[in-house]
Amino acid sequence: GLAGIGDGNLPGNKSEGPQIRTAGDPILVGALPASAIDEVVRKHLAQFRYCYQRRLAQRPDMSGKVSITFTIAGDGSVSAASVSRSALSDPEVESCMVGRFLRLKFPAPNGGGIVRVTYPFIFSPC
Image (cartoon, rainbow, N blue to C red; front, side, top):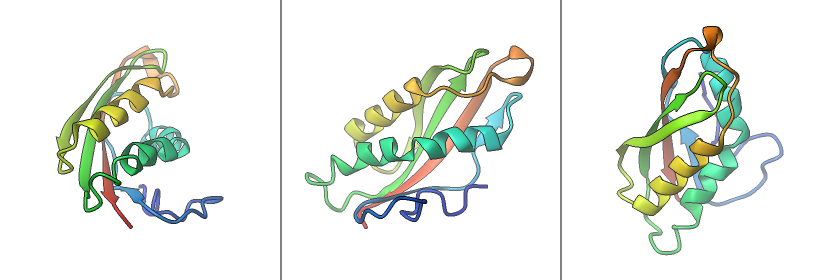
């Protein structure tokens, strides 16, 4: 699972401020281990935090869960991404997150098929 990921206590992450954490395990449909997906998302967590943090000046009380559904193609690229659920009600943050997912590269799925993932995040201002 992803317990503790993105809670501001990542190795080398000494910054204060907005927090991001995952909300449980990703939901997978396809042939790629959840641990491989966790590793890639964990490596890029600061990018998702940035999407949220840059909007806090305008909406300092903004918090909540955002779930992104994305498709990993046979070569490991992300071929599609969208917001499946969001409690933030902030299209700018949501669009930023989708854009970040579209740039990620995952390991190629077993057997070359596609993998569909729903990945939850929880954002809070401190």
